[in-house]
Image (cartoon, rainbow, N blue to C red):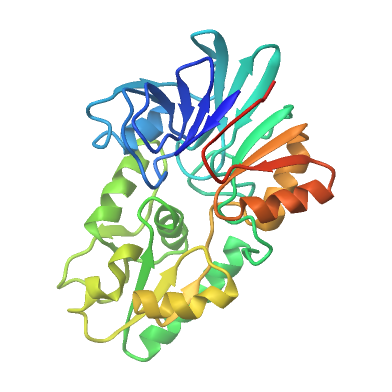
Length: 321
């Protein structure tokens, strides 16, 4: 049985998956889990625990590396890469003679900052549907980077300073890595710079990345948190602002208005619609439980393909085995 209520509880155990309320024991799939209330005990990869250590000071944190089976009470468990960001993981559970995988956020494309996702077949799959609508077809990262290069060149040719806005735990790491590898000098806001320094502890190399200083903008591309919008760089008079965020084409006008951006660039390190379908087909589950904004629509898509797909949209208890 599972219980769905601000997270997913594997009944008969103390284990929750990405619980948004205080629980006895919760698996945390990545450092970028949005709404979050620390549980009494948390389990995650060492990388995720390092990234969120300030948020879980009152929790007992159990660090488990990838691909190393362990026991939680009566169940066997293992964390496997999900490909989203450093430390992001799926959890595989062996219970009552069957297998369940909670996938969290998944990414099937090549990332420069995270281990490739491991896809394992199992009879029961639980997954997030953040971008499980056909409107979310993210272009290849290389294509987005070409557009970013054109934006930067255009800004500089007009005498403006290029400023890029990205989520500190989402796109910023991938963006800074790709920009630095391409030879750009970057002035990075302290909130993102702190995350980058932790990523470097994991052995990820970054180039051309410096802490942003107000009087050192010439020749640099500035990278600021998306949530700050253009207000965070109001003191920079001549600038062109690009918002780097997962988005559909018809959302980009609103994003420009919301963040005061001149352009929007859909760099994504999470799966869009087609990759989510591909993931389910590769796992080949007998049942799929779906959470997130597009769970109902995605369930219908999977049902047409022959899967027993169940959207989790309101508190419920469901039979798994």
